[in-house]
Image (cartoon, rainbow over all chains, first blue to last red; front, side):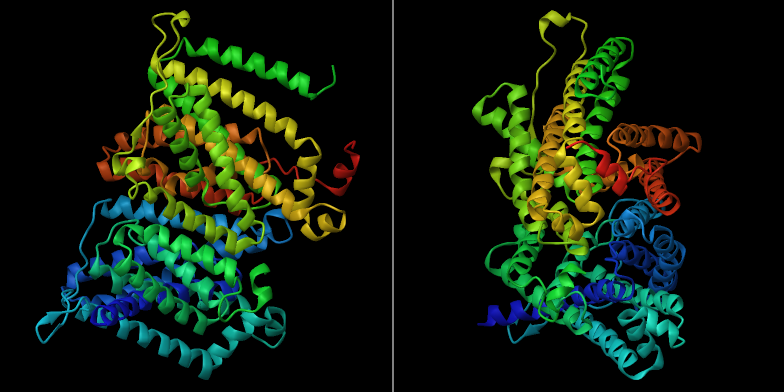
Length: 298
Length: 330
């Protein structure tokens, strides 16, 4: 029972990270109908920027907002400089559905190589002042560490801020309108292009938080977030790819699922587990928990 | 003789093949190696052209399917002691089987779901090798095709031999694919890509055609994987990374996704990039960081520039109009 509770706790911490990455993917999917495979690349770059900031200022907590701002900015640039012109150029051609996916792959590859060019391919440590050693309760040490707690709290803060923006602000309303009915939103005076860029910036910020929070528990290298990208995608599919709540729930479900698999089957299956879970979800409930049936074909 | 008939293409392939094989005697080892690399990449890219350019499905996981083919070929040699030409066929057949299974799932999925699923495959599959002792773990398994037969002469180098094998296989594959794509199957796929609903209304079995495309494409990818294993002399998880899948997509985009002949151009560019970037890097006194990553930067910039500037592929805007579809004889 104690092992099981530990597993759940660790799973929630991992799941919080997947939720953030999943949010990053869903926000972009809702606003532009593109699965942004570059999300992992953007998060890598913003995390490296956070790492540089920490090297200068020697303070992890100050480097966090810098990483998040950088993430938002990078994402907005990718949208405005590459994705928007691409959508206009490829509209109506046969490659309309393929070109954006390929462009995001190009950005992912480009950022990974660029990061390697600047910081090298070997691992670096982006450490947080919090211990990654588990809490000790009584005489037993559980695997849930202060850094894990920070991950859960950080993810919660991001989600609350997002929920508040989407529900209570004019900007949130415009974001929802622009993704729901772009034409009508445009007619009602919403500047859809600009709103889309803002949507991408939010997504970049979510990805940056994920990268900056998870990296202290592992290491940083140009491809250290590849698996997070896949997990985030699986989480988004579980959640239905359309729903922000679904993205969060999907991430938590996946996190706990992973933790259970690691605990009871072994650590060697991590990479394949994401693929197997994805196939199972697509076979059983392709529209996800919160998605409508037609969502899959869109 | 009819222009562009299968027979004519066969003669043309034979001539090109003979010329290339003659030429291989006059270049050094490195060029032979790169020539073989171009031939193998061309095969792998043609499998993406078949899948994405013709049937309109996207796969980010063809590197993983190459791994399937490569491992199958090596295992067939180690455990069944089959001669190497047969192991290539085994690699191709097992690749086809994997592609059939994936295609069954893929036919139900569209756009983002298919892209994500194949991406998960590309990330997940190569690491499977670490879990099974049979697959040799991180070090992988070695693959020995042997040197050139004795009648070829004593000074026939190893890489020249690989080059010859790769060229012969790739010409056969290109000849087969070219002919296949001008049959009714090729037309069905193009109709499918242009408009799935219209294709279904015209009586085309949409999911059947999609699964067939995925299966054939994977068998070609599996074959490319076994040739790749021959060239490297081994199969290992690190040879079939996510980057390999991206590289293939880049090659296909540079080739102008719908152009089979373009895959040769794409492959040549892919092989030339590291060479060029090494020259640039050493010119600027590049460190290891630069030499390791500059090719990736150049490839990505090329990829982005290509989709952005010429979304339909460089100067091959040969999409089938209704008229051209109709004018084909049935």
